[in-house]
Image 1 (cartoon, rainbow, N blue to C red):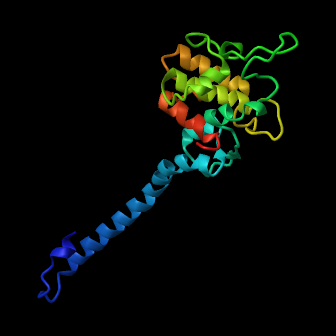
Image 2 (cartoon, one colour):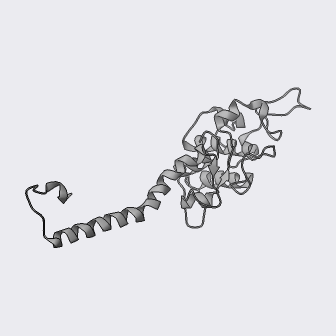
Length: 205
């Protein structure tokens, strides 16, 4: 910053001043190098989903996009499952089929997750809510996640990222522990962080 105020008429400056400035530049460069990985950590998370890359909760906690545990995820979003009701895994049913029997009742949220949501909604109703925050927003992503890991070909979510048991535990802890989830022994996620992670496992982030 001092260089911009030099007097062009000066023949030069004392060597000691130049030494101080050189040392200052070195410190700035070193500081920039040392903080670069931190900046990369901040910007890496939003692009995980767009690249199809995802991480298990423990890897996502570290925020390291170059982590060897990165995997390729092809999970569908809540909106995509709403639009793909004929493609639902056979374990789940968006609506009731008739006659009953031998048809199937629509899958309820409480058929898979506890505690239940108010009103006892179906999987489809939760997905159709369009909620992006709050308990219903988290529930919608959990329902999509459950559909994404149901036995099917191709595998949308590798077991190393999460299983149905992982998502059920996440919902139960979130719903009973003040909208928080503990992905590791030392980390606690708030609602926004839970939503952020779940979205990175889905194709539209």
